[in-house]
Length: 393
Image (cartoon, rainbow, N blue to C red; front, top):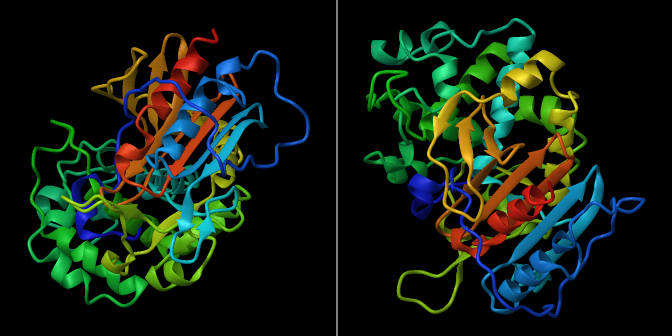
């Protein structure tokens, strides 16, 4: 993924934020996307439909320049609400739209997790395999004790390379994908464990980098190539891809990230802070296709789909208008609200970019929120969306 200094600890793991309510009006410049053929069921709450409570909240936030991005809600594969607000590229006056590609940040961990599950399904690895069974160069405490299960569930004790001394100085010298992958791997291999594997829980970007290396070693393909072929292409995700800074600057389909530096009233573009580490980019519709491909067992067989989604380790729930019971799965988070299970992941960078993918296999909903503003730019949207879905009963 494309990373920056300011994205540091929360680069790949923003949590959903609590819902906020308020009076709102339809913002000028909102561009509904074309719906799927057919119409949503009448069971869909009015609050989720165009002109409803959620639509008004998003429009108000966009009108106040709080939110810039796209939101897509589908029910049983049919569009309930699709909205695009703000600018993908302010300098060139390119608006956000249904075909805009947004940085996915930590949502991309879902692709790594599915890749691991595919290889496990083929018998090429096992969840209790240790790091040392597949990779070289790690200290014994990691090589012999950290398993793929630990890496997937953030219980390995590994941390985050972006805060390691010298990381950013080294990162600015990387000029190829392989150099960046090797460079990150070098910093991860020098880390010590914060706790014995399985004895605690700590969100770990390092752990998922190690999983990416394992995917490459076991599959015989470069990690990004494996995901392109076996996930993006298999799920019908079209232009979803991994992009590096040169393409971020030149491709008009890609939303640039914007943030307000401390003490400034104006947002600036973050491209000047990017390093050469490929980031996953997709549209809302492409993530919706991925969600359906995963739960409809098009990427994994039924047994490994259930294994990937099922709850593993309990987590503290985020604040919000709905009481939640939250677990890590093997990649996706598993959340119980009332009697509704949902699955997904979120991600964010402090210098512009935040998103969330949530899907409800039992009831057929998928919700995708992608923004090219700060993490706070979607505050209230995920919580209200979940509340309206769960209260439907």
